[in-house]
Image (cartoon, rainbow, N blue to C red; front, side, top):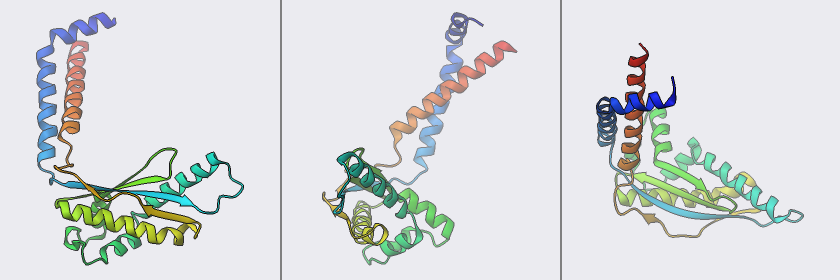
Length: 200
């Protein structure tokens, strides 16, 4: 079918597509509303290596990036979680006792990003309490700083270079992003349904 005909069909059935798009938006926002509202708090870390003799700058920074990525994975291990939970300032009751649920919630509570071409890692914690989000971010950063040499050798240093930055408002769920995804999904479903009915 020519593309001009497809466009004509979609325009002619705009009401159907519009309703589907609206339903997608409503469902996405409804899904967001049933999720707990959480604040975020971020801490930035600088990862360096003291023994980079013989490495050119590009190789050295790529090596540091790789270490940062590996540290990001270490954060989600049980041993790391237990080390962070050993702090009296952390609200342990926020995490379930069931191992599967606990790991899922921990992965949802902590996010890490590595800034490309740098040795900077950003640790972001999410919690229903702004204070607890900041506490989690700080404790994770401190644990990374103290444990990094044990995992990658004493030539690796991790330093906290920024104070924790808590969000002023709720960071999750992201209503704008979820709403846009709902709109797009609703539009695609509506368009597919209209085109499918025409071919039938």
